[in-house]
Length: 522
Figure 1 (cartoon, rainbow, N blue to C red):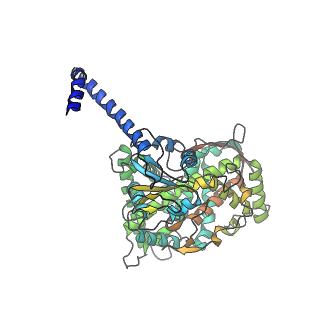
Figure 2: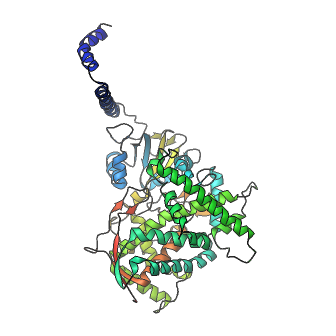
Figure 3: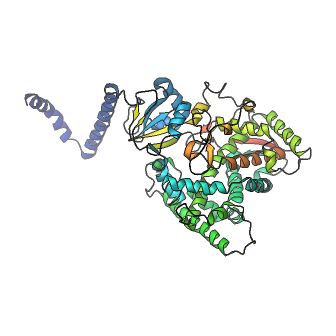
């Protein structure tokens, strides 16, 4: 008591001075003091209380905020810098959440092959995706139901449908080129970040969802899509239901788009047999039933169509833009791709067919190389449900953490790829296809089981992207059409590809990403 009394006696002058301050000044002093003390205790806690049984925590000054800003500015630089300090497994604080990063092929395997009892993609993403896609689908349903939904969609992605898709994609791209203001005349410049989103959504909607959906994108539907797209905002990881103006527009757009798809389904059910083309995904899903006999509802189909369009649009948009930029940095590759098409389709270049794409070895290697350099998603997250032991270490990841895989980091690591930052599609010439690896059925058909790989642009395990084959068909047809129609190059020195922009959740090049084009046959 004597010590406490002495402290209070010495503190009396300070307390007296604080009482004389105005309320705003006093609030400011208390706030600053609280922040300073929080930082001091946070730093002391990191320096003095380290748990050797948990992954090391990236040093940070401000609690709750942690490493959020540094990570958000350049995720790969953040990963590599901390990998040097802490190894392949470490934890950082992001807006109050503990994110345990697992790098390298073993880290990919650890996260992607985590058991359902250990990790959950649903708990990591549902607060972000459900307001956009709608209820009852994707991450707003039990995992076994999601696996069935993926299986239904995969049933609709057959070789026969892909054969019908290629001419539709080519038609959409050529029609866009004719109408686009940026392609008037025999030569000019075009901002890729303006045109590629339209091209990818037009081609995806026409093939996967039918003519009436594609035609709607020329009207008010495009505005709804934009409002819904804005729902994929990093802030919504924390505040998905907060009534921000953008979230109110997102919710209104979701309801209107769901109503639009429901009306499409209703009209199709009323259509006469044989009067319409049934090759798209809407028809594929309309009469499906789950294993327990429950028919898939029209509402679920509508929400799955929103998910299909939104999810595929972002990744295809990013990859198409990077493809065109890297090709523009190497005009000799464009020439080689044009000659490859002539060797397959003849000097006069007959119409492109699905069967031609497997023969376009260089084009396929270009796509693989761009996906290595620029996987659309830099961080793939799971919520830990039960403690996870990290193999070959003493670390146990608690169930209060999230685990994060970054396959793009290993794809940029010199341990696995020579000159990893160099765009070199010829590096893939002697590589074997991963499809020769062990296959496993997670509930939606056989997929490659291998997750301990440095190259996983479409993910792995039970959440591997089911649209991988469609993406390759779409990308191949779009790029082939551009190569047939144009020679193109980058402005300036002609070699500098724009840097990545990490401000969005998908890794896009910095806008406007302009290229200079010249028509082959003006």
